[in-house]
Image (tube, rainbow, N blue to C red; front, side, top):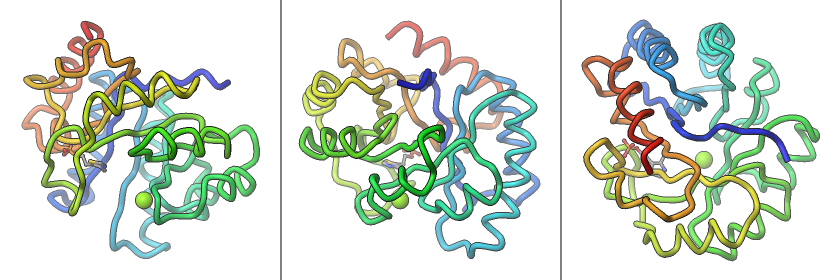
Length: 208
Ligand code: TZP
Ligand code: MG
């Protein structure tokens, strides 16, 4: 099993950022202690996605933080990212693993124990589980109970990161769930001071 630190997993959102502010926010978040970065671009063509991915990778490389690309195996391969994250409507985990080979990171979204076990068997290195709380970042997101999160953590040997509406004030709900960390968009991407936000979240995750 790969050694992955999922304590504070930053997922990007370009919808309320210029490219410059996106890159700045990611860099500040890296300074503040995020342990993994996922570039998540919806409605971005392959060429622009790749260009952005290469720029983000320059930053994450400087801080030695793995960069995960959401949805797109081709973009991840082309920019030399550390891995790919896929959900239920993306390429199947087994196919992504086959394309990326054994060394790259494959992350998968799982909302049920069955989906979690299948993703693990098919070669996922970690699972994202949620949305734990309502979120405006992702449309039509069904909430996942913490009891389901706990059951998933018990059912698979790979690390699990909780996602969805999580912030400093509400992450205590994860205590004792077995989750290895939290994945956030808004709590960092919308923060006035993303470095401070990351520092505070990182500290809080350690208390879980
Ligand atoms: N998957 C489940 S919830 C979510 C994703 C990508 C969005 C989480 O964003 P936020 O802003 O941290 O609620
Ligand atoms: Mg996806």
